[in-house]
Image 1: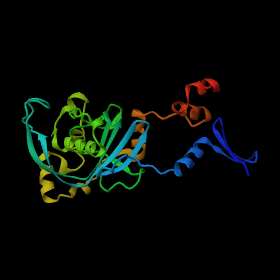
Image 2: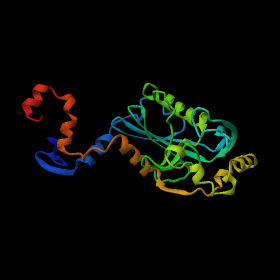
Image 3: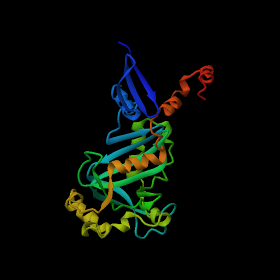
Image 4: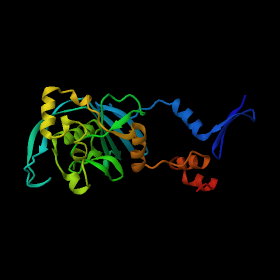
Length: 274
């Protein structure tokens, strides 16, 4: 019995003794081959809190979930002489949070400016999960073609040189250890802190938020946070497309391009492919 696989155009065909036995789209054929291979989504242990990973080429989107808890933050003082930067003054506050979903798109392991932050009142389960709008400084309303753009401008560390665990640790440390201020409102128009203060009396002001946090650290799970209108999967796909655009549909021609690094120059010329 002689079995061959032939790829022509956008279809792959299996021939048995010269007779076509099966024909499927190249994309389905490649998916089947991928299912037969063992692979690791990251070349090292998956960092704590990372719930989903999506990659294409040198682009990767990490979805980090932060669990509900009380957090100690540096929050811009109402009497601060400037809204952010040098000269800004902060106060230490203790605030309760619901689940946070932080999606970060990296290219070559480095930040790209494509990053978003959402709320949830339940843990992530699937890519179909709905995302909720936060009530935070440093998260901008519809900035840079992103619904909930998270400002990481002051994270100057070169993440590309770090392990994946170190990358996530550095991002977390910056988010929770930095100052929460009005930079988004100055540069991007509006932050979700000012946009969402009417969502619930318990977060209508910083004082109210602190008081509610002392009374019930899990109260944010009861708040009717406004829906973003986005699901996790579509958000991750859109972010990945910004840093690693989708490739053309698989075809015989695109597979030839994928073989470029493996072919000797002389053989390329001989086959007349390039």
